[in-house]
Length: 481
Image (cartoon, rainbow, N blue to C red; front, side, top):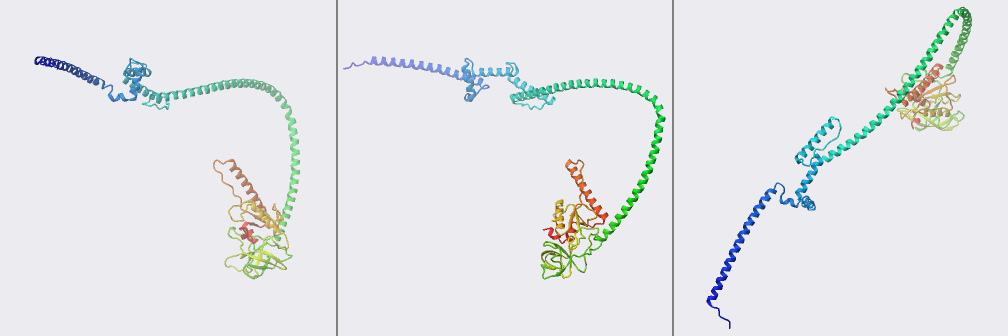
């Protein structure tokens, strides 16, 4: 059986426990008060430290990667702090820029801005086109370095040019000195020759007087011989003039005789090649020319009214509109005994072909072969493009229909067919070589054209232009096809 505690012992234990509890409570209270006081002091100090650090950094700055990098560099350079590392970097940059590590940052920025502004003014005054950046020192330095390099290259080039120019001046100076030396030598030679000439002149003056009489006698003899020759020449001239007069009289007689046999250009044509013998319909006609009368298929005729007769060879003042157009044009397609079948090429408005109408082809003649000269540029198709090549077509028509063609106008020529008169181009103030050559060729062509025309007029040869010729041979409409 356990022992039974006495009341006295229990009370002592309780008191003891109470005393211990009170002691512990007081102790803990004291510690709590102490630590609370320390905590308050720490908080106050922390708040003061935060206030001191507020102008430098805030808590969020600690998360900035650059601050982390700065702290990492500070860790490697312990015992330095990140701010100390930053200050060291700033001092190094200040020394790099201004040469003074202790220079304040504001002073560094102001000095950089002032230096860039001064450099810009100096570049502007020196007329150097370099743009400096107000907020980029490296870009400005690069621009200046690039300009300096370019200026250095330019200076080197100018120095090279200057050296070459100096060498050329030296060469020219040496050449000039050589020329001066040569000039002095030539002058010395001339002085020697002048002295010799003066000595020779004195001898000549002495001998001149003695020769005057001899020269006078020779001159008198020459005058007499010249007078005799002049008399003989006058007699010969009189004889030649008499022969020329005989030649001119003979020429006029020949022209008169040729005029008698040639067509008169100012009067209507008298010779008719044939007539319309039958008109079966409005597409076919028959003429009174057939086998044995030198007609061929393809030969064309112009049809003229039998009451009006044939027009004159040449036109009046306006030859471009006064054309010898007949009432119709026909072409031989089949040759029969004593007649030929012809197709109607065209009929003028309001006209009708009837039996007895006259037919005419300037080239064709049953009794003779006419001589033609063809020259100039022609436009048979009516395109407005005149070319010398189409003159060959006119020559071919002449030979095809029984005529002869030659290149020169002479007494044997019966007709001269001229194309468009050559035009002389007008040159500008500064003509080119091709333009000048083109004008010279045109002038040569015009001279030949005028020469042909002048000879024909002198010899009384009828002159017809392109369109008049085509109408007289009934080929005007055919040429345009």
